[in-house]
Image (cartoon, rainbow, N blue to C red; front, side, top):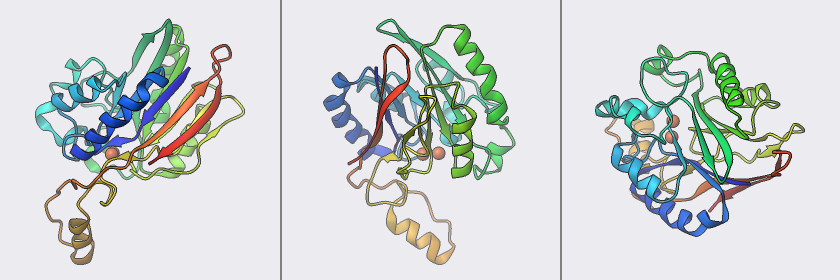
Amino acid sequence: MKFLIVGDIVGRSGLDRLKVELEKRKDNVDFIIVNGENSASGKGLRTKEYEEIMSYGADVITMGNHMYYRKEMASEYSKLPRLLIPANLTNLDGNKSIIIEKNGVKVGVVNLLGSFGMGDMIEKNLDNPFEVIDSIINSFKEQGTDYIFVDFHAEATAEKIAMGYNLEDKVSCVFGTHTHVQTADEKILDTGMAYITDVGMTGPAESVLGLKKEIAVHRFKTGEWTHYECSTNKAIFNAVEIEYDDNTKKAISIKRINE
Ligand SMILES: [Fe+2]
Ligand SMILES: [Fe+2]
């Protein structure tokens, strides 16, 4: 079974690039996970971006710290059946895990937020991801999942690597999101779990993580926190493709895509 995981979609150019790439690739993969936390002009996701990403062929959309940028969405997330909100957030309603059955195979997906560098508002409403994940995995296993994917949306490289080893014999894949820069450390552990510290972003290539480069430079040069504007520059496509042995359910290959 082949999975495609796409890094944080940023703004209009990211959505446009996603459309082109999924059209090209969706028939060659069995399951697609897209991180959509920056699809609404860099900040969060609205119902219309949810519908757009789903229409391109995503099976599940994961999120992250940008959940809070769209206050009007707080009561809407739970109405979006294939959207996952971080499972360790304590003050938001929505799906905290999902099992999707496709072609007779059950895939469990969960999204978690890291504990460091996410800002006060997130950190005061967050349970320890290392504690929360165990009961979710148990529940997935009780329900007979064949594959389990963990999107660990975190800032600290060490926290992500530690989560990988924490789950090395329990899940099919731990992949990181949030930093918007793809890491070159994709691997398959001896246990057959696939891992990458960060998938990267699908969004404006000439930007600072999606922010217009001129604004980012100005901010750093002057210390003035000027208004956020999402870049509209042409998007890069960052993803990983992972193939598993259908019998053992262990990963056979993991390939980074950075185009
Ligand atoms: Fe992001
Ligand atoms: Fe993020």
